[in-house]
Image (cartoon, rainbow, N blue to C red; front, side, top):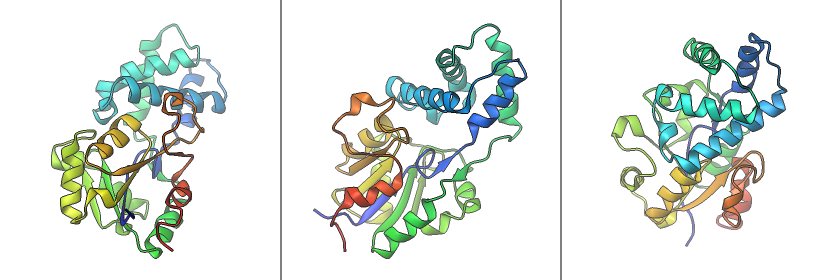
Length: 233
């Protein structure tokens, strides 16, 4: 059956943070040096481990997930010692607003191309009340017909109810939907539970998600065109 509606996750699907640069700055104050490439891989692998072992945790407040996440990150980077002071310094920078969500450079063009091909577009995301304002500041909000945010509806992925609520809002059958996200355990599992197809984006090929061999994967959202094939002319 063909696809009519394409839904997107937000973080590390449409949006990203320049967290690697900020982290390098913070650890530099402690005379710790790591390359940006190594830091990027450590963040990526820490993301994937939490997604796999603690589904839904990254949807919680940073105070709840950050201690565990930070420990995994430092272990990946072989950073040891006074991690409490380092974590506090990192959280201080995080709360100062030193990080701002940005749209991936190709996101507007991909969304516009999909719309031009006749696909309806929407968002289903685990996010706080800032989601729509961030989408607006990135110039993406008006590109979506329906935006469903966990903090607004009181339900978070992978709970199938948030997907069903989105389907009801869009008046579309889940069998005619595709969900694109970076978290297999929240995004794909939740989408599949209601009969939606899914595509997982993973910037670093299969790094950190080796267990998902054989699942539909792409390096970024532009991979949707290869996935769709001849769904629509």
